[in-house]
Image (cartoon, rainbow, N blue to C red; front, top):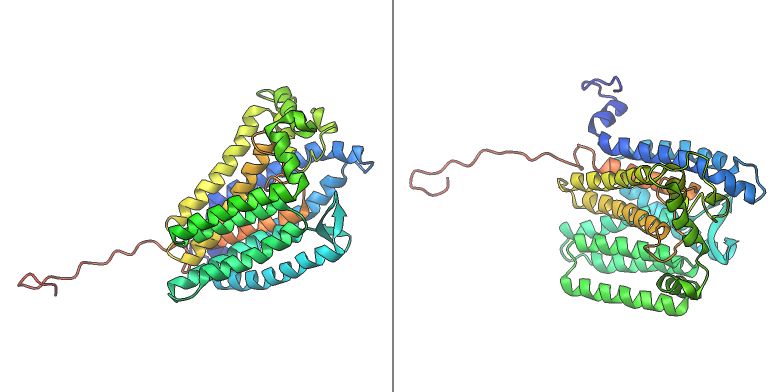
Length: 389
């Protein structure tokens, strides 16, 4: 226990006694697990690419320290400053998304990264938490201004961001952003007729993606019928879990990571299954479950609509991303290049997720504008004739 007294009125003292320390502990455990798994999985990938064995480990550690700093600094911010930063940040991110179309770094036919000072940055990763906060702010305006067209504006802003992501192309990321925005609109009281309409539009968009993007159709076809194409990555991932058994082969002793593409990123959960076994892998799932359940439990007591919608959007994004990644690794979902939050290698992912969880910690702190305990007021006295006084 850190030696901070309840009478400490410093910024750190106030933060320590108001932040949800259970959320913080689980988050730190996930980050630590990610560092261990990147050290276990990435040397084999680096060797295969002709790089120094610890190339990816060093790069991940470079982002790890700033990521922890981002979590702490962001969790200190008041909601009003979070809103302002999100609006400015989203505008900058949208400009960066446009820039990727012209100056983006091409990887496997997709332009999703910008090269800044020798480091590759993926703007769409930052668009997810920033858009969630901006949408929460717009939707919360309905509580103060009944005629404010919040649903229309949110749909328009989200459509622009989703469109920019689809053009890259990154259909899976676009679907995650759309699902999170829909969740926030639903929580904000979206009329049922519009819920049905958006659900139908989402289904139509999925069919359209299948028809328009050959790589999407190929992944779905191979998932439904493995004989229709190459399923090497998924098959190798399943073999990794089988080879690991209950307790795994031991840290660094896995062999399938030497042939598994993206073993340090999209398929790092398979490396965890082979080297650490079923039980630790289930423990990783439990950590994600505790993080989400604890976060939503705090939101059940939230009185501010903005805080509720913003934190719920970010938690939904994190949970959906984790489910998709682990589902792909276990051949329960079609293949999709998506990182496992705080576990997979990736600087942009680490910083964006750190920013998002910093926001969640900030908005669930026990303070004015965040969680407020219920106030018990005495009942009004009754008049002698039985009428209210």
